[in-house]
Structure formats: structure tokens, C-alpha cells
Image (cartoon, rainbow, N blue to C red; front, side, top):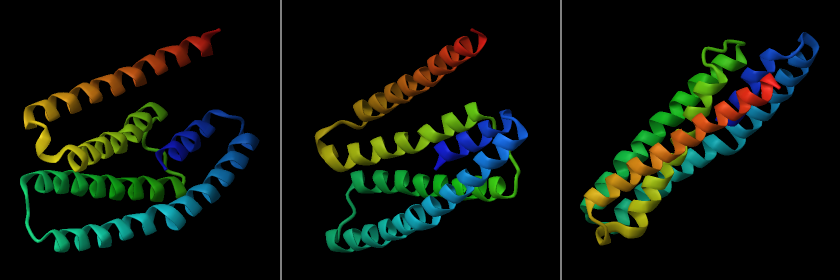
Amino acid sequence: MPRFFIYNTEAGERSESERNILRHQFGIMMKRLWFGITWPSAVLTLIFGLWMWYLLGSFPQWLMIKLCFVIGLYIYHFSLHAIYKQQTKGVFKYSSQQLRIWNEMATIFLVAIVMLAEVKQNMSMVWGIVGLIAFVILLMSAIKIYKLIRNKNRQT
């Protein structure tokens, strides 16, 4: 979804006719993705997550940490909904660079959630946090490098 936000924002740099065509098409695609896939997936994840919690019966430490990341992912989801509503009204508060960074937030949450689900007690908390911080630094560095390359290509 954030990728569409980026494209929709960058469409503003085009001529008026191109911008209108692109934003109309992105609007259709965003609506279909948001209400056809993203929201139903969020609801099903919540239902199956609560069911899994019920089936486990206990509440181990790794699950509590994982749930914190899942709650963070839902907060992220609601922030995307706010951006979606803004863009459908023609309000573009964020630059494409800010949206690129926001796009990677889901990746960070998902890596942390999957890591906790797979390794559970087999990994120390310290190494997990160090690994996640290293992953975030690598991801943000890649975004910065991409921006530099993109700006260089625009100048030539």
C-alpha cells in the first residue's frame, strides 16, 4: 500500500494530464488493495491470532514480545489508513522519500514477528535486539543509497 502512496505522490511531479490519469488509476488500485486485501487480512489475522492465543493456553515471554510487535503493526495499519484517506481527498502531506521510509516499517515489524515465531527461546533477547537494529540500519542505508542514485540519475 505505501508503494502506491509513493507513486501517487510522485505523480504530482508530472504534467497535469499525466497526473490526473495516474492519480485516477492509482486511486482505483489503492481502493481495491486496501478494501479487498489489506483490511480483510488484518481482520483475519486478528481472529486467528486470538484463536491461537486461546489454543496455547499459556503466555510465554516470547509471545508477549511478539504481541507488542503485532500491536505496533496494527498501529502502522491504522496510520496507513489515515494516509489513504488523505490521498483520496487529494492531500499529500508526505514526500515520496518519507513514504519510502514508512514503506519499510512493515518489513521491520514482519521480520521481528517472524523471527520471534521461529526462534522463540533458542535465541537470546540481546542478540535478537542487536540483529533487529542491524537490520534496520541496513534497510535505512539502502533507502539512503537509493535516494542518492535516483538523484544522480535525475541530474544526468
